[in-house]
Image (tube, rainbow over all chains, first blue to last red; front, side, top):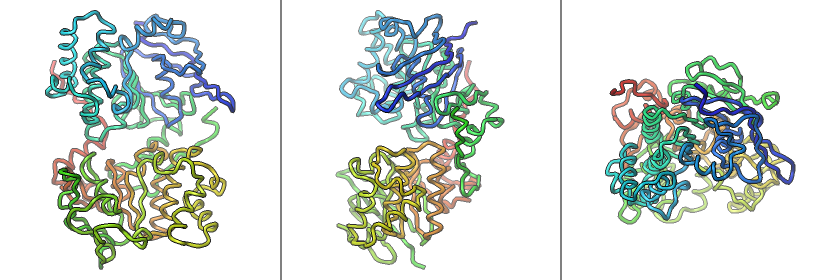
Length: 277
Length: 254
């Protein structure tokens, strides 16, 4: 079976007044119907990788790649119209903070219906029914009431579930989740993740999970890519995390304070210039 | 021994909303005390009430045996108690240089030899003198948080209130800032009250902690109790599970 997404030598650079900043420098991976985690610090290029696949890179940026292929469609040469029909329909993206990523002046239900009616020819009443069913699928109790609420009237966890509902209602094959739970409370985080996990498993989607939290990613994904300074330093199965070989991955793992480990001071990352080469 | 800070039956209300409901904690001098709970549990409100940033309706806050007045705090209080905020992107003035930022508390408290103190404060938080005339937007998140810590320390307080000091930072930078905080607490014999939603961070930093929910303290624990799992409240248990990462429920109905 051919992979859902093939990324080979992806590069994203931003021209600035002081020269070109290379945010992503030669990232390659393939994705089947599996859960792939991309981990790295701020500025490692993990979000720009996700955005390039989604086609959300700012217009001044330059993207190049040997291959950027989604299910037989070359994303780099695709027309804007083609990309529009892919986005939201076959490729969807969950953003970090529901406070900013939902439209504040539209009810949650209308936003979900809008996604659905953009991509499918369905009647208003059917769209409404499907939106409410989707809200129920992300375990929102009293979905009919939430349908009419505006984003400021719901909690962060509820907003993020509404976001997931909106992204999944058109039945995408690839879901890119960019720090989907970083803005949420620890306890709510797990609820949202289990909703996401179940839906991804049931629908057989490919998932790219972008986060700075290596432990969280490894407990959620099948495979993890670790990025540093715009390129991939290590790729490994989530179960093999303990055997990570790259010092950066090892450093990321050991610098987290955990319950029961008594290490004072915490080990910190000793960033080596050769990692960025 | 008198407690460095003792909060007695504190009540904070915003209009009809009870943000803190009869909360009492006692913090010994030199201790590091943690407050954990989810958003809206009142942990930040408690910290802000101690700093004089939340309206106290009832109860009292006693610092070194002296009860604080209900209204405005005096300068002597702020000389003693300083706060570091969560978001280093929002808590530094965007149009002031680091030098100007660090001079402000010195000017307010009429402290002389600013020059020497600013250089020492920068050095203490691990940033060299080269950072002195930069603006906040030229620094990374971790460096900004170091400046916020330097600003709090420059007037030599004895108590530091830390409101989620590392939650806006990357994991690798978090370790550096936590190490810095531990080191200055040891060097200066400071008392910490630290708010966090991350039990891992709190058990690492604090000897004792209070778990808050809906404006009340539901459980008081020592860090070893937490590590050994001697927990009575189901709510604390939930937080424990949550801090260990995602666990997939394997038994899926077919």
